[in-house]
Image 1: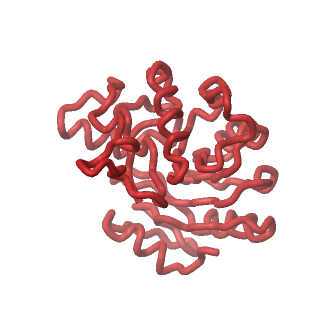
Image 2: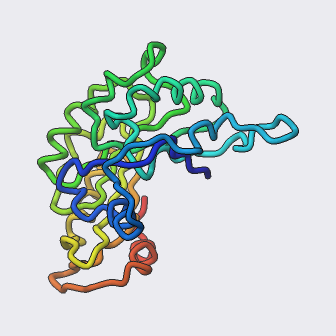
Length: 235
């Protein structure tokens, strides 16, 4: 696994961004998250060591723009170089998530056709309104590998109409003192939708405020992922 953040900074885009961990962390460090800038890691996928070998070894999954959005408008002048590096490193698999799926068509390279085999696109949705808005678009796009990311999940979602050709659905709660609660019933409902359509499902993290069987719990941030794993409902 490798991380590649060719630029940093992002803008809050919808309801799921309210307690964004990137914005919270930047605020503590006095960084303006709304300023989008290229990073020193821009050319990381094609960087080589003194022996002339790629520093990122073949066969890895590269998590792209996990501290920003690959489709953010300010990065339009830089994205073509990123697509070129992705093409060059066909031995790596690149994964990016986006809340701006409506921009994908305008951001694709000329040779995209029905998608690059080494790219997975994850469309992030947080409630039914965002799901109905974004996934209608997502379902029609030419992408070889599609994921749906319901994180932070802040309300019940019916994904049944949008699961065709989706490889994985990820669900997780919100992490913050003021986080909106995650009801376990919402998680299980999405899991059943995935089972019915033979789509892989992963419960990635509980929410800070977690509801199960009508009982409310407040969980430490450090336990959110481990508690989700203990549920043992991934399939």
